[in-house]
Image (cartoon, rainbow, N blue to C red; front, side, top):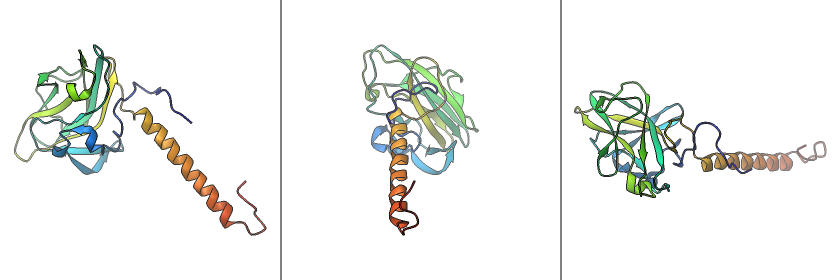
Length: 193
């Protein structure tokens, strides 16, 4: 079964954001360490590095189109949260002030930007980063989402991730049926019904 349209919220253009392990698809990823904790069943990454926010790479954008980038973020101490694109262009977030202190509880933050002439996130580099961090303070991020439009919606997986999950379940069921058919051929049960 093909998944062709995502109906819950806007379509997430970034793949593998639940696992958050697509390192080759995330800029500045070496500064963001995968954590054993999860939030809302989403893999969390942590950084103690100022600036160098994590961002999706190789995502195709339409020129002159508005996009919204969002993520769950929090800090474990004093720091300042900022939103940027490209070469340091600072943006205002939907639900926070510029230079707001890092929230100490998980908070969904989002900002909208115009792709201008750019056709890839490699050029735009949407990201949240800590402008300041006290010594030993970390910033945590999970559930990144890039979607077309100006309204941030709840986190959702990339369409291909949904199709991959459906394919995994289908393969597991086929394997189980094969095991049942081969295990119970004893004259009483001929095969899985």
